[in-house]
Image 1 (tube, rainbow, N blue to C red):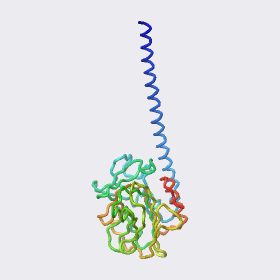
Image 2 (image 1 turned 60 degrees about the horizontal axis):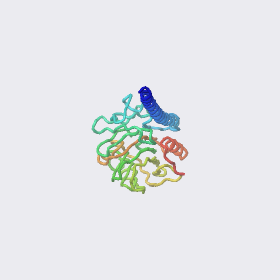
Image 3 (image 1 turned 135 degrees about the horizontal axis):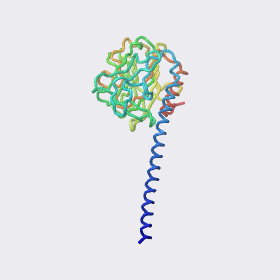
Image 4 (image 1 turned 135 degrees about the vertical axis):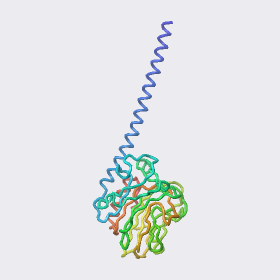
Length: 288
């Protein structure tokens, strides 16, 4: 009886120790995952803080999602609606914020959607959009960079747009599942053929417009533009500039992580530096 009693007690002790060990292993694994995720976010924030755009002239807009003070809410969480997206451009700090006062039209903050660690704003493709001021782009050269991931292959999905008519409405987005579209509505719109939509793919979209050479458009960088348009007419106005829609009819469904805008045509070396920064930050391969 005594011998069996000790065997039973020893077995219970073994089970208890095993449970403790398994719990410790799970805790260590969970800590390791959390530590890795946190280190990746720290790395992304470091890329942002040391970005070359901090020292480039004529930076008008810089919206991004990795830094702590990008949004109105101090501690924004996964699934929260976004009322204000702060402008980080050094000369326009919080002076040209993207905003949406209507709760039903707000984009949603989503964690870890770019490179498995960087947050993005989700636009639902139905009625989500944010307003911004684009007056400094009127009668001016300009440059746009947008990091986004579309979530469907629908026609007329625009992540940048406006409400104006011909010559007054600049837009960037997707004309269809197989075509990216960019340009000044009614004046210089062009399509660029892309692979048909199958799965979400993060892209860096670059557009540079100048009175001298027209419009050049790149997807994920490269030496030569993927598409060009020789029209050189300036925007005569930019009414109702917005993110996630154009003409209050063609809404974008997908995630947006970063938007950078200059009111000048930046040089090739500057473009290369920005695309390299974005490619490293979001783990997007830049074309040679």
